[in-house]
Image 1 (cartoon, rainbow, N blue to C red):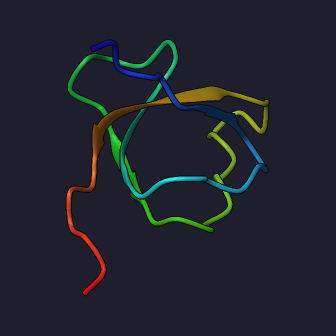
Image 2: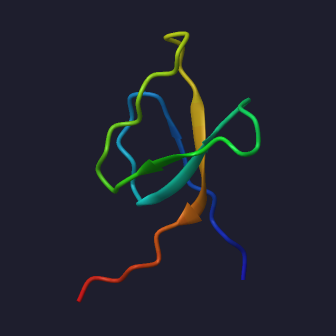
Length: 61
């Protein structure tokens, strides 16, 4: 079973909650975003791509 990579860009709304890694950043850099959060801008004010590396595993009850 292959994993689907979730990719979002600066200013977009996240479709899934979890840990996101910004493209071009050191491997240990990640941010936590919840479903529906808007992806924040980077320090240079440029658009950046974020890939989900650890999706949240909590299910609704």
